[in-house]
Structure formats: C-alpha cells, structure tokens
Image 1 (cartoon, rainbow, N blue to C red):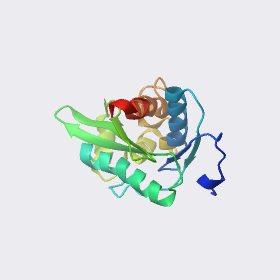
Image 2: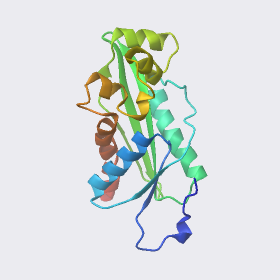
Image 3: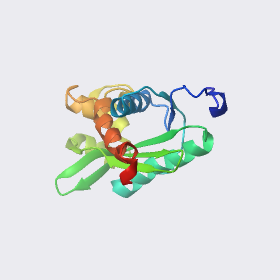
Length: 188
C-alpha cells in the first residue's frame, strides 16, 4: 500500500495517523476514537509493524511492550506521520481465572506519549485450556465458537457479550484515555 509522504500534504490536510497493524478493527477504532476526542477528521492507515513479543502476550509488561514496539516500528517504517498507535491484546491469570485485556500506546511527532489499558474480562475455562495448549486467543475463539477470523471482527469480547461490546467499542474507550496527554498538552 502506498501512503502519501508528509511533504506532499497541504497545510489544510488532515493529520496522519499510522496504526501498527493492518487489522481493520484496530484501524477503524483508532479513527473513531481520534475523531471523537478531537472533533475533527484524520487520515488513518494501518501498516504491518512487529510487536516483537509472543503471538499471545501474557501479562501487563509483555502486552504493553508489544503495543510500544508496534509504535516504534511503525515510526521507523513511516516517519512522516503525525501520530503512531500501537494496540496489543494480551491475557493474564489470577486466582479467579484467565482474563483478556489490551494496552494502547500512542506517540506523536513531537515525542509526546500516551498510554492506557482496556477493561479486563474473564474467559471461559474451555478457552483458557485452549490457550494453555498453545493457541492464541483469537484462534481459540475461532475453534471453540466455530468462527473464522473473529479477531478481525467482534473478537472475544464481542462473542462473549453477544455483540453488546464489540472489539472496536472495547478499544475505543482505551484509545481516548490514551489521548489524555494530547488533549491536555499543557499538563504533560
């Protein structure tokens, strides 16, 4: 995919956001969250940017690092952007069971950073067993719920809430929370 170079933009052009993933859900929720937060339009494109973590990140640190690495690698691949966004889903476990969540990491061209974590939700034991056997959450959902490529649509949260919360709406709030430093630059 060819992206416009920054020098080809006119002053009136919309700011450019690069998402460190081509997943259409991650691209769409980034566009909607930025538009909602800033009350203006953006040009949003997804690119393949390595997370440099496990296919199924475990715990806060690995998941956060995956989101941050996506931004670092997207920035190297496409330095002309105004913002870079990394979204990384992960799983964790505690005495109550296995749960899912995601980290959002955002950086702008002046180096300001924002980060936030989604809410968590617990996974059914059958899904946890599949993940323990080596599957990624999306593959486990697809197998257990007889879906295909669910992580590019409603995701686990969409399946388990029967569509009341989609993967896009789930990420949307966390992206807006990660934008707090950009909405209040004088405080950060």
